[in-house]
Structures are given as structure tokens and as C-alpha cells.
Length: 118
Image (cartoon, rainbow, N blue to C red; front, top):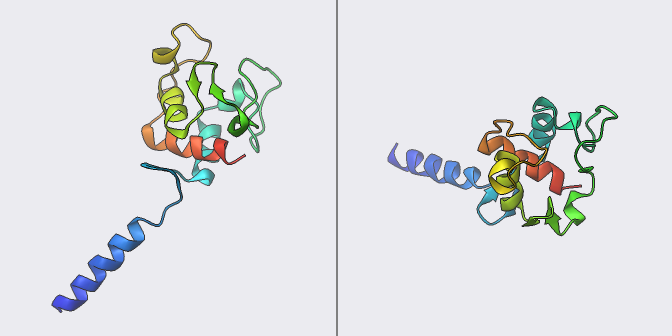
């Protein structure tokens, strides 16, 4: 019985680390990110790959974000910085057109994983 529990705990620990890792310390699920981008209505202001949206272009297209050197001309383009920007753009660039949308950390990580995969 004791060895069965030990084996189950070991397998659980191993499987817990199997998520897609895009950068040290950050894990993201691109498919959940696509869904979250639609739920937070990112497509209302941006062209988001794979997410139908309006023809209004308030923010820059996000379909080639992975090739950009900077996020909003302010931050080096890393997943960690993209998560910061998605969660609180006003803290980074007060008065910019992107509102704080109340995006959770988990959703921001997933959205960043999706956007950086294109």
C-alpha cells in the first residue's frame, strides 16, 4: 500500500510538470489563450489571429507580435513582459488607449502563449 502511494505521488509530480513551457517560470496553454482572448474581447480593438473581430483598429494587429522587438514601444518583447502588459497596461504606460481589463494572471499567461505562438 505504501509503495502504491509513493508511485502515485511520483507520477502526479511528473505529470504536473508536463504543461507547455514557453519561458523559464511561465507556463501557458495557447488554446486556452485563444479562448481567453475572445472572452476578454481583445478582438474589439486588435486583429487577433484566429479570432473574428470588428474592423475597428484601435490597437496594433497582434498576428505577428512574436516578431516585434518591443511591446507598445516600451517593454522588450518577452512573455513575462507581455503578461505584465496584458494585466495592467496603465501601470506601464499611463493614459495609453488600452484599458485594464481585469485579466487574471492565468489568463494573461495563456493569452501570451497564444499570441507568441503566431
